[in-house]
Length: 388
Image (cartoon, rainbow, N blue to C red; front, top):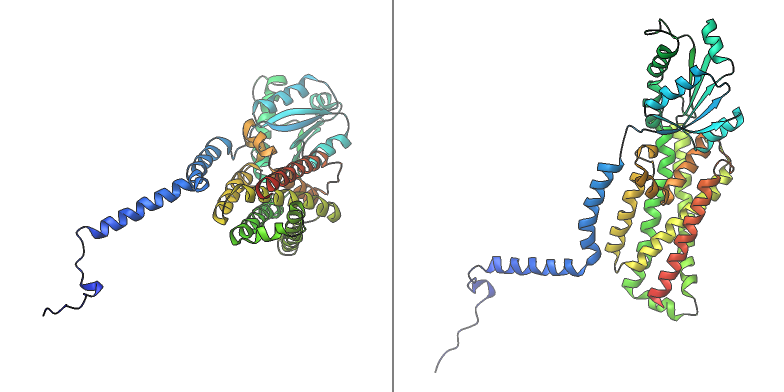
């Protein structure tokens, strides 16, 4: 009679040869198969580093050139034209507007359509030749100290070059007039006055995109979206029901940032809070609609997070928050104009630092409204197509 030996414990079973490497290889193959099926994640691996390289390599420039400049030319003299030509030759200034009165001069600076304004008074050349020491006014929008600093520092050398050509055989013995350089809205060139208002838009962009994108995909992953759709409620009503609470969240975030900026960092609020609230509503709704559109494209929360960050990266780099907007090449500025953050940064900085009115912000307000309507239309269309 044979006696059956008890089964060996698992730890007593001999390890197959190369078992560790075979199992590890199987897991590696499995992960590559999953990565290939997850097309959004695979695209992120390729697109994000390429986008960073292109943006940083070609679009970002910390020394902006050809900055839009207005001129109030109250006399048409040879010396005045020589000074303007010398300013343009530096490649810092690009004269895009010629105004006829001080009110138009100030309006262009307040609205942000130009970054500099040069005023040459009537009788300027005659006063210079008589030795009366007249004043030449150069006003700069210093809400972005980086964009204004380099150009302002080049003024003295430029003017002396123009004078050497028109009045003297060699270098002029002394500057025969006064250059009155006014750094408006941020005369101390404080980076806080530029950064803190910009943080309102960047934080809202990041949070609004992620909140709505994750909110919808979470419903889909948990299977509760089908239950909602089975109820007597339309998909559009579900979308608005999910968006509206986050509008309140956005208001709370904006109020916290602005409040801390005013109380702790001394950032002024010179404009209307009511107008800032209304325009912030457009901006928040636009970002919520974009986030909702992302949720109809992706399949899970991880992809929603990746797509949101992919949109946030060009927003923060091409909007003028980190780098001067006017310093970027034209193609990058066109991309930036299609981002809600670009227009909102101009709006929030103009209202808080310049005291701008709706008339001054007409272009950016209409652009933000158009982007909001476009984002909501795409979100509604994609939502119905995906879930109906």
